[in-house]
Length: 171
Image (cartoon, rainbow, N blue to C red; front, side):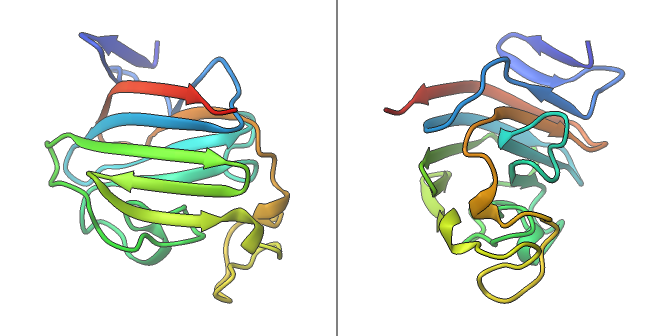
C-alpha cells in the first residue's frame, strides 16, 4: 500500500502514493478531520472529485506548512480559486482540526475553530477565471463542476498525517 493506517493515523508509506481516495462518493456532507504537517509540507484535501482527473474535475482545500505559499495557494485556500480570510494553521508537527461543510454550492471551512472560508461555487461563472477577476487553472467554471465525487488526501513529497476522519452525510 502507498498509504499506511496505524493506530488510527493515516500517513504516506515508505513508497508513498500521491493520493488516497474514499470508496464512496459524497454530495452534501460535513467532513471533520485532524491533520499534521512536516516541514515544507504540501498536501490537500480533495472533495467532490473524480480520482481519474482530480486537478480539473474537483476541488481542493490546500493543506500546507505555514508560510510555504501565498495568495490562492496558501494553507486553507480553495486551491487556485479563493484564499482564506485568515491563516489559522498551527506550526508543523502540531495537530490541526478542520471542518468542511458542503451543501449544494455553498462551502464552509473552519480551521482550528476559526471560519476561514465561506463561499458559493455559483459565483465562479467563467472557466479559467475567479470572481475577483484573477485567473485560475480550471477549464470548467467551478459552478459547472460535479457536486458529487470522492474525498481524497494528497501526498506531495513531505510527510503528512490525518486522523479522526469522519464524514456525515447531509440531507
